[in-house]
Length: 585
Image (tube, rainbow, N blue to C red; front, top):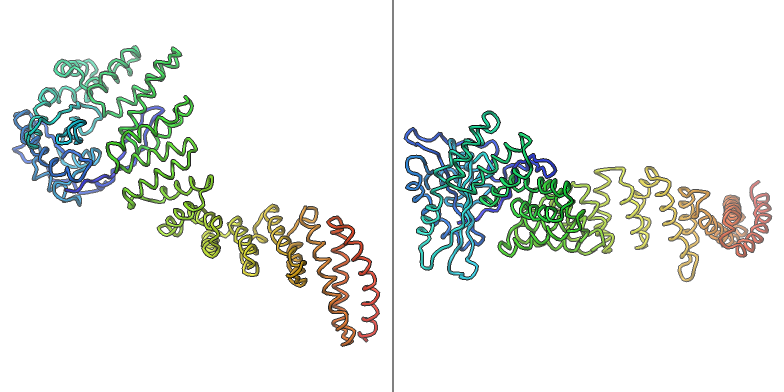
């Protein structure tokens, strides 16, 4: 039996902790609804989902428990309840692409129930090993209306030697009081805005049979709040609602808001502590609800309790170590604390659980975290994986480029830079980084395409950085054993083409160009005289004049050397002038 872990986020619009609609993953939004219930069906139609099992080896047990629950619920509800049969459940599962008896998470089970016309209620449950006896199970089951967010939750512990199907029957038996007042609790919600007195009477009727009925108390709390009633009364109803249904995100959210309001009004540390506990439960219920958890993280940081969200995730992972959403929750909590290693570790664990859920957001988050310190190896690894899956994602390409630069993977960096520039021709920073990398590898001639981009689109600061790369590459060429005055002169000419004349780089460029041009001129002097060439005389003269300008402008770099060479330059100027006069008739 396959355990399905797709994440579904419910839609909430509740004040500061509002949740955004992430859609129903797994059940297609526009899927064809199954046919209406048969004419013979009567009573409140309820779907009993197979209990969610954390371990695949518990799947068969979960299916047997579900069968027992469905069979017994028919007797418990009598004529007032119509339980959706195993066969109809399996037809529905197959229609939506699942195997028969597939085990869905609670949110997915709810989405499936909503696709079955006439279904008013659903029982979702969670199966886990008994705390002290691994041979037995504990079942936490929840009955609630398909269109509302509160009902009744009950915990049943398997007896020693009890068969799974009998265990399911006994769990269903415990829902008898809740089933008997299901319609009353729902009537409160149905009439809350139009007939408040009737709604409160319906809630009271449900509460008489089930004192802490989550749906009835939530409904009454909302009515009292809408009328502007005492906050203490609202809180009392909400506290009873979460006692009866600890999985009601709506009730916990409203309770957190009211506890926070009381804390602000009374400056109460006790109420502030309650807010934190409320938020912990909200995170347990909906760990993947991004908008909600961002608001909670901000509050926890402001109140000096940044570790709470991580604790919630770790508690859940002890029970369900393969829960992607809890790892994702932990990674976000770690990011909010700027604990980047913790975030990367959590995201890597999530990837191990289910790599198919690693989308572009996943790769962006792990790349951001790895880039902060940076963790160069993991940045290159994960950003590289990201661009392999999303080759046109400019943000991931940027992170991959950063990782490749930091780990010295020059050819990979150059290839990624070309992709970035193709996607966005204004990407000057990676182009500049490519020039720098190629310069360090003594492959600067390969950088022309990137240097041209910096010259065409770069800011004055970026152009000055490019000039710095050129001068740093030119300086070693003046020293033994790498003397190459021609290459040094060419680099410094490129440097002066982009450098700020009043900046810090230009004087060094001028000085190196002056030295290089003079040495080239001096080296060709004997051949110029021997060949009596007019062209060579003019070229030598141009180099001497270039040397004079460079040494004069760059004199501040090394004044003594510049003055000595300028003395020679003056002598060469006289000599080249006479050669031009003699050879250029």
